[in-house]
Length: 172
Ligand code: K2U
Ligand code: ZN
Image (cartoon, rainbow, N blue to C red; front, top):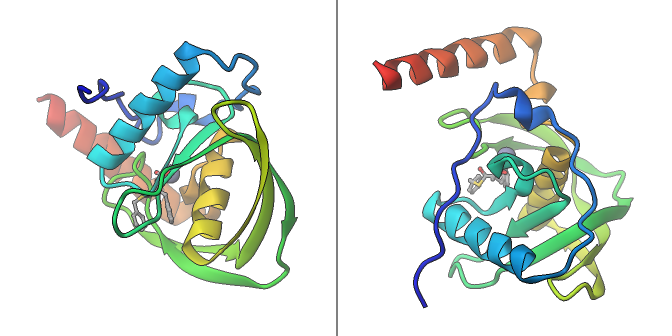
């Protein structure tokens, strides 16, 4: 099977990253095509997660693969966090929409979620460690939130300036 066509990833501070995604309602071939292209885009970018918001599709859809062997794909459609542990930990995060920037973000150590799979079947997932962090990071994207919004305004403005300059330099 040929590799699905890659999708362009929106770069911070693109305002479209602040869009709140809508629930998925159609479990059809178009959805499956989108899921395939999101996985191809995530693997190509060496990411361990990707939210539809990041490819300018504003539906509640996330793809994840936190496995070392890059062969344990997870599709989360219309995900809901049913429980998040009160215990939290500050971990270093990056984002495919904020290239080259890494900083600490506080996240719950464990989460329990309910989500639909590509066939529309409901499933519950108990996650901890990196998978729990990734799920929280991606679900923020579906709410229009990028991890730099947890940082200080000073840091965020420096990041915005840096990335806007990088975009300008890339165009010239
Ligand atoms: O942009 C994204 O949403 C993909 C994120 C997912 C993620 C961020 C922070 C912590 C866990 C997951 C990453 O950029 S994927 C790149 C990456 C890979 C390994 C560890 C951290 C970040
Ligand atoms: Zn991200």
